[in-house]
Length: 251
Image (cartoon, rainbow, N blue to C red; front, top):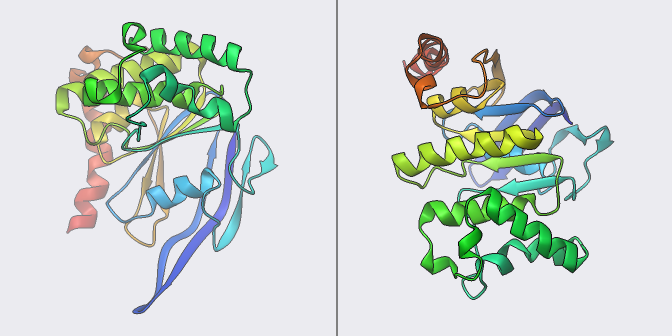
């Protein structure tokens, strides 16, 4: 679904040239959940923006579903750390926003939006406004909006980072449930090692700047995963294995 070859990014600043990414290669298969894990400033978000068609690399190329990525693509859904809901629009109206840019049939889009509201557990809040929702509920609205156009690839940049620990854990379970229903391809960014292990089929570990992938780690935990998974020996072993990269980098 996604194939990135030799992606490099350099920025020119007053202080000189900054190399953000260097020779990054990654592949995400259909229905695969892949997480990027790395220290702050290693280029994770830059790589996601390139995958979304929002930024051009300095070198290398990227393809989505076998076709070169030359800009934003309706096959891609993107979720950022903040859902950026329109405060003057209701929950249902916020979910329907992509219908206009994607030129979807509004009757079908409205029916799909209501299905998605049920999927994320917000069916009774369709006429509420964002300021009447908790942070976790707003993020669910953002997830529903991302799914409206039925994208094949989901790009998620730390969507739960601003939430409290309990809400974050609940939404992690919710995201797994949603993903298991239709197995879309996902590229997920997080700083949380447990979150990466819990959600992923594979975890790609990135080095400090210039960012490059230093390990492609397969997570072999059985699915579906539950809160009990967090205390299993296999889960602890996986977290310990990934954590050693960052202990090494800090020394």
